[in-house]
Length: 562
Ligand code: C2O
Image (cartoon, rainbow, N blue to C red; front, side, top):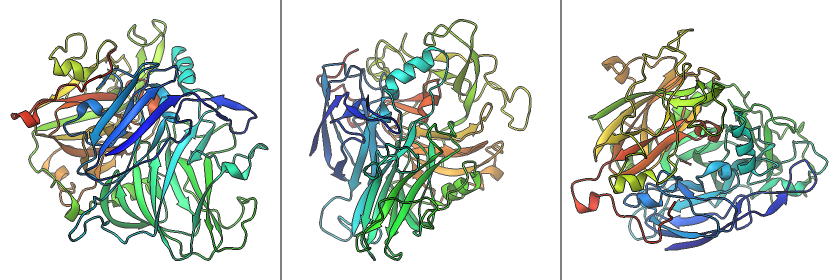
């Protein structure tokens, strides 16, 4: 049993590039919050005490929650939030998965500061391979949490922005392990606001990289060093050598890095890929950290960016580099727990993207007849219920007034990316803002084509599925060319990567498959919070199986009530 206490409160933390402090919501007073270390098969017990003025839930991003759907965490999907002054204990196992995951608040934009790493190492034990990684054992492990920082309370900023029909303003800085680095060029910046990773020559480090940013995908590099990617989203991959890592919000990458350069100081740097917010107020879109060889001469007190030890980062619109990285990852099949299912029970073609809508009363506080930007899946803009969680309604079989079971398998019109007029412009005439689920029979194999509409902005949407990993069978650009035999020939059915978050290519598509063997309510949504807030999500309702062990369990004791 791995036990933690998370006290959620609103400490004052230093601003970036401005004097003084700002009040943020944080766990145990820190951003990022505590790291949870576990071994496969462990039970996690996390006591959440809410001393903040807000409603809170915690989501264990990527944890399957097999048999514990009530512990998943998304507000109003699987639970009512933990209210101010209340506490709740999450209890679940981390089983059947190893690698790097993370936890974050799943209510409002609070996850910008309420998040932390969740590391699952192989279980201890006897026998070949027990307790070992399926790659060269690293000398040391280092968590690299990428984030975004606002000089403000993001819950307040979010409410201000969306109540006036606008989207939230850009982050004030990108961060590595909570620190902005030294490129923002502000007088208040000092070296203690830059993350340092100390290494020793000839040792090998396992970097556990997590993108916890609200709205930004990153390119990640370390000057003078290359990586061997060994896992993504807590699924082992065939070793993949690269000098650049691409990581979308919600994704994780585990990569070995050998300290084989000549001793010195090297920049680690991140820059935005296809960001919705391409420029930040404080000088650019790059954040830095330093990799410092312990055995080097004393480190300089500043690290000029003109120095040759700064990595060359791809341009923000470098779709080629992103696609190259994403499509080069394959599963380490000998350790996969599930073969790719070949027979498909449920096929879905789902458009994802942003569009315009006329403001509806169901949307928060916008004025009628005002045109607003909405995000949709198959032209449906998702909104959360307010009175009871969807899982509770499923369990009690009382969906009326909470959700409907008519999430469409197809868009309302045939989507054509190449068309310059309607019907390319899905949702331009208004999208219903509703709570629709797709109901799945227990154990059904689902295939989803995710087609990016790129109607307003051309950007990649990181689509995250709760409760499952899925296989990524194929991805490409333009219109998905049909689910016919010719199309399927391009599917990787041998060693496709398993993920919980797929960055659907900019102006392109991806095909995923998963087996719905976990009864409950499982959200699927864009991990760009600005898009989720305006409807880019849906929920799968997975029915109970035939046996007591595969039935939806009752809610745990002391479960939060609305
Ligand atoms: Cu990491 Cu529903 O989120």
